[in-house]
Image (cartoon, rainbow, N blue to C red; front, side):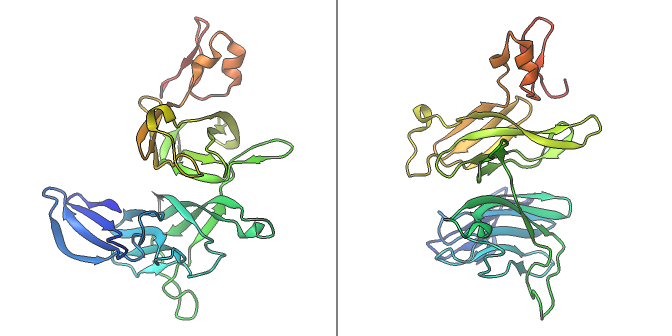
Length: 303
């Protein structure tokens, strides 16, 4: 965990040889401030385990595992002036082997994006699905009888990323997410999904009517962002592991971070439709437009 706690303080947590600790550091001198505190439920015991964290209103919100075996997954609130809260322990209705990907603050809530084993499909083999969980930042917890020191506002929902048709093709494995960005005048997050057996990546665009109402998503394109010739051949069975995804709106590109490289991927490939107005317009790509000179061109933000 490496977070800016305030303008003068960095908050850092590490696994510390399977004994997690956290500390504050001065942003000017990088010297420690005060004593260290326990990192339990604030960062994992093993750096291989997933972990996301953010500060909001002086409170630390984390999603990680609290034990050495990574059995007890938790969304945890600590520090600040409100009581410490956590998700229910060892309850598959709350979590089932989650892998936390990203956390976003929006309004009075914090959203946690993750993938997990779907209990609704437990009659099949293990099926991984992607989800978003939400908690209220000002949740005070339950009573001594029900949900004491636990979230009362926790909700979660499945993220549906699929290609429509007679039989939907699902991309169930969430890999990376941006923070909240503005797209078409609406706050959105951009995500990268894959299937369990490969690393296919694609973008979806929420359609918007003139009145601003959202319509169904449209499958735009499938492409491979990882470049083995420049980033090296990935190890393991799961292929390249994406660490982070950010949108550079000014240049019209996605920046995808992998363990060995950062890849810049254009958000539009308008040149693919050059010379054919029907293909350019029919692509429904929000970044492409047909120019009077007979070419399909990139439309910069605000055009």
